[in-house]
Length: 540
Image (cartoon, rainbow, N blue to C red; front, side, top):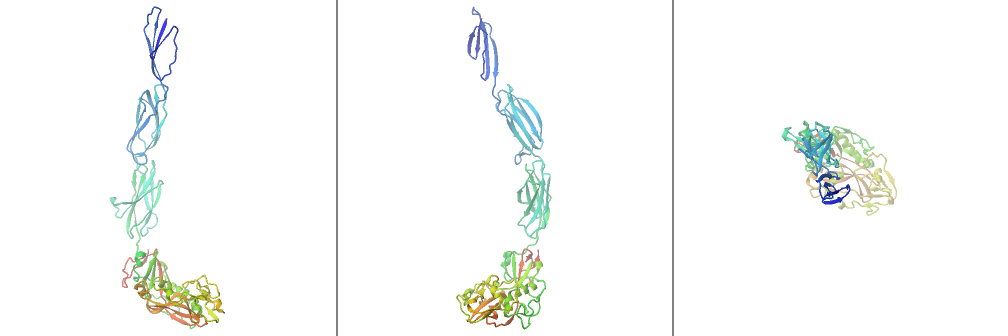
């Protein structure tokens, strides 16, 4: 017997039983028949089989729904799992874990469809099974779904409103996707369509602080917050209202109104540190206790850096006596303390002081260095002293401009002093140990020597007044220790003590200055700055 085998187009003949192996992937057809010695053939016998050794391709997962923000869907999500290569696919297996659980399910065919209906995060896992029972690699897909707006949205004021700002604290909560941001809005009418967004703050916590800036003063605002979750849903709060404080004229505006009147009232006070000769050198006992003069009017001198400086329209009526070494020693502190005691107002953030030489120098164009010998030193450029014994006030040794013992002082400039001095004049022998800077000068204030006529008008008065600033004149054979003063429109100085131990005392008046902290008061809410209707001043 001969067996003929036809395998994949190749005929094999054998007189024995036939066995062979086929390892080629795909479908193979085997045909066999027998032939006897006489050449007779049997009927054909046929069989087919398929070899599949390759894993199925990984499936794909597609999503169908309404997309929100940050990868969230805001509707039910249709899921389609598809075989990548549809040949030889038997089924698809999948499962869902998380918010929308689905037990492992096998779907015959090349596609599987289902819906994600639960809010939250669901994770899909799927793979393919082919006809040989082989499985593909798994694929996973995360589905975030949130169809609900934030559950809470509140806003509350944080402290009092300022002039142009209001601080708030907002709260929001979203149980599914979480809070993404806070949208801060404001309105002056509280009508639904009138709100304007000032800022959006990205903040994933359940609380957020915010300050509304650049608001109008003395205005009622309605404030609300819209909380937005990560899916894009929003929930508005109920509005709260706040009224910003009144706001007066800015320092910039006040600075442009030099010479205008302000309705300032100091708190009445008294001053008696100058009575007698201990501090003031008034050995004639002319000084008496002083009290606030309530009839003074006040004008704007300057304004900058939230500080308003006022000057009294005129000098005071009372005389103030200074003389001798004691008067030079203590003039700066006496004059400042007198004005502070009588012309301050703590509730308005206002502190009184005496006018000093710096107030004039800040607004003059006159070159003081052109004055004869100004700025020169005895013992250096200028030698106006005789070679005999000299006296000088105690404070001179502590001034930056004085060196009676060869070493310059380090403490006080012309308008500085922080303690009273009661020592008698010091005594020095020999010219080599004495040096002093020429700090006195004088000139007539006019539109040509001052920045403008407004400052001439402010500083000029019909009666002389002291400035809280010392000066020294190295004139002729003496060192003359002086105090600056103004008479009419003329800046000069008055002699109190000299290096030959000669003394005199003199009387002049006070010229109070008041410095006001503009962060504590509103100036100019009413009035036009005229004498009859001065700018108002009130606490904030």
